[in-house]
Image (cartoon, rainbow, N blue to C red):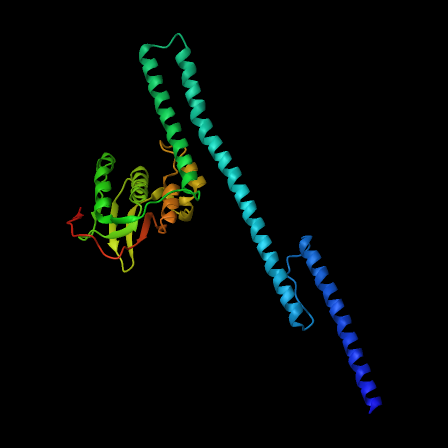
Length: 312
C-alpha cells in the first residue's frame, strides 16, 4: 500500500514538474511574442499554445491592452496630422488675402495713381479685408463648436415656421442667380427640441452653399418622419460629378474648394459640427450630377400648430 502511494506521489510530482516546465516554456514563448510585437517586428497578437485558462485570460488582457495602445497612438497621429493640416490651411488662407491687400496698399502709395484708381483700390482692400475677417471668424467659430464648451440651449422649436422664414430671407439671393427654388413644407409646424440659433446657422449655411454652387433647379423640402424631422435640399452639382461627397463636410476640403470664392468655404463643416452637437445628422449623397443633402433632427413629443406652408 505504501509502495502504491509512493508511486502515485512520484507520478503526481512528475506530472506537476512537467506541467511547470510547459508553463515556463509557454510563458517564455508569450514573452517573446510580446517583445516582437512591442518592437514592431510583427503585428500578430499573442496566442496560447498550451491549454490553460489562466494563460488564455492573461493573453486576452494583454491583447486588449495592446489594442487600446494602438488606437491611442493612431488617434494621437491623426490629431497631430489634423493640427499640421489646419495650421497649413489657415496659414495659406490668411497669407493669400494679406498678400493681395499689401499689394493694393503699395499701389495706393504710388504718386501716379488717379483718384478713380484710388477709389477702386480702396474698395478692393475693403473687400479683401472683409473676406479675411469672415475667414478668421469662421475658423474661430468652428474651433469653438468642436470644443466641449460650446453651449446649446435646447427648447421646443417649430421647425416649419423657422425654415420658412429663413428661406424667405434668401429668396432674393436665389433670384439673383436666376434660380426659383421649389419649396415644400408640411402644413403642421413640425416640432423639434433643440437650439434655435444652431438650427438657423445650419440652414443658412446650407442655403448659402446652394446659392453659391448651383445654377439649376433647387428643391427644399421638410418631411415629418416617424421619429425625425428631415430637411432635404436637392440641387444640381455638376462640379461635384465623380467626387467623394463624404469630403464635403471636411474643413480642409471645403476650405480648398472655396479659395477662389468670396467666402471661407467652412460653412458645411460648421453645419456638420453643429448638427453633431445637436444630436442630429447631416449627410450628403451624389446621384449623377444631383446633390442631395439631408438634415435630420429628432422630433419633439408633439407638433406645435398648423400653418399653411406649401409653396413653389
